[in-house]
Amino acid sequence: MTRTPFNTGWSCRRKTSIFADVQGQAESGHSIRLPHDAIFSLDRRADAPSGAAGAFFPDGAFEYRTMLDVPEEWAGKHVALEFEGVYRDAMVYVNGAFVAQRPNGYAAFVVSLDSHLRYGAENTIRVDARAHDDSRWYSGAGIYREVHLWVSDRMHIPEQGGIRITTPDIDSDRAVITSATRVRNAGLTTSTATVTTEILDPDGRVVAAETSPVTVLPQSDGVVRQRMYVPNPQRWSVDNPALYSARTRLDGVGEEPEIRATPFGIRTLQLDPDNGLRINGETVKLRGACIHHDNGILGAATFADAEERRVRLLKAAGFNAIRSSHNPMSAAMLDACDRLGMLVMDETFDMWSESKSPFDYALAFPEWWERDVEAMIAADFNHPSVILYSIGNEIPETGNPIGSQWGRKLAEKIRELDDTRFITNGINGFVSALSEMAVMIAEATAHAEQDAADGGVNALMGNTADFMDQAMVSPLVTEATAESFALLDVVGLNYGDVRYEMEAREHPNRIVVGTETFPSRIDANWKLVTDNAHVIGDFTWSGWDYLGEVGVGRVRYEGESDAFDGEYPWLTSWSADLDMTGCRRPCPSTARLSSVCAPHRTSLSAALPTTAATSRSANGAGPTPSPAGAGTSPRAPR
Image 1 (cartoon, rainbow, N blue to C red):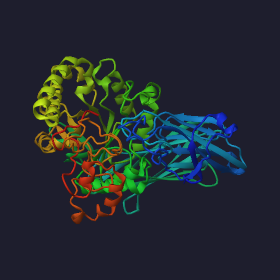
Image 2 (image 1 turned 180 degrees about the horizontal axis):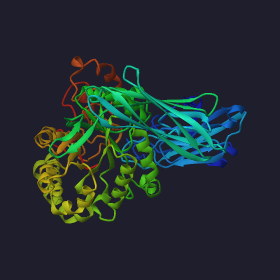
Image 3 (image 1 turned 30 degrees about the vertical axis):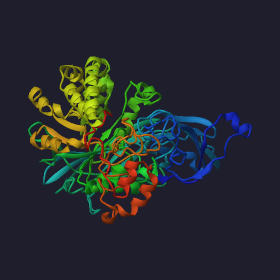
Image 4 (image 1 turned 180 degrees about the vertical axis):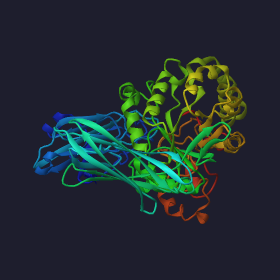
């Protein structure tokens, strides 16, 4: 078995009609290396379909091509491509024939090529992707995460989720390690193989091992379960991210054995309203940061070094947890979180069946949600950093008794696949009950307009925050969200800190986490976290600045627009504790820039638009724009 990077030798061009090639009207592809963001190099414009949400980048459909040289000896092998992420509506073709699709732009997927290859010849691989008014932030487009080529025997361990390690019983003397290895027989005859699993400690020494035979019928799977015991286990934690490794060997299926290395951690998770979240028996409060998937001046392209750098700097800033908002986290960032000791809340979707953008994933959700959940769990299962799964973000259906059943399906599917973590949902009661709050909204608007006349935009926004607080604790919201709250292990509240103590009074068995909160309330919110055992943490919006939702955290100077979003040519949200280069905000003057910030200040100033607010803060003169809500302007629901 070999797994090799398949990131070079690609070309990318605008997707056109099949007739354009025949007529010589299609543009030729330009050579690129994956990961690649097809949109980021295009010229932004004020009338772009993405608008402020997508940072005024254009949309488009794109075509990626490469050649795969397939030798004759692969005729008896299994060949597949693993895509870590293609945004969006990926369509995969081999030698001009359709092979697979994946609507979700954040789901990892594997494409078997066995039925489509020409052996002893070059094979054309084509991947189409497109983005158009389908996201509330900058998404990028194309093959923006890595691709891997798998070549194995017909009898093999599946590429995705083939090995699952659990640690169900741990004490100071030993840890029980259970390994479930799935063996797939893609051949035409029944075959018997041997699975050997060795457990290596953080220093690389073999501390446990087990060997088991397995017979698998043609075109079917068999699962080998092994139970091993590790003496004196080192516990994985935020402060001591000790990683073990399971070395799995599949023998008897070909000339060479298949060998996999699977890092994992030994740790326990416990949850109750008196002790909150406990990791290895110790209570841990989540100092959380919400982050989007883009890498700032790299666009949406996902590079392992950039992902690790983000984790390092967020941890240095005092965070011990990340919420991946609002999509599954990249494999590279999960690996970095494991190595560096950063806890993870991984999130499934930003929408279910109700669209938030005209052409978003809701169009595919009813048919694809189950496969996408399976992909996320397969990617996360062996990562000790992952402690929480979030089934959504500000989903309108959470306030509808029928619509909320999607949440029950999602939660039960996750429990079926992985019962070792906890399930939450970033619920904004205001969004959940939005359609029923017309009268309250009208009254609040009238009051806000009067306040604006008396006190300007700051008074207007302050009134909005007060109204949202009232809405969150209203009987209307309480009734609307009752079922959606009840199906969770941990109630996630977006901008719902006013409900924390109320939840303890009315539901003494309930655990709460602030899945998304106003930075301006960090002091009060953190006191709620530390004073209330049932509140396990706070995730501020946001930890790292991102492309799109432009200017929502900007300073508004006299005479500038009071609109929620910034106008063109604004580029970033400007609503984070760290800017998009990783510099802590508010930044000091250029004379006192830290070694981390200094090398990036020039490029950041050049990359950002030159409105009065940003240009003054970039060179250290004048006020620094506050993260959304850091002054008096609260962040709108997301």
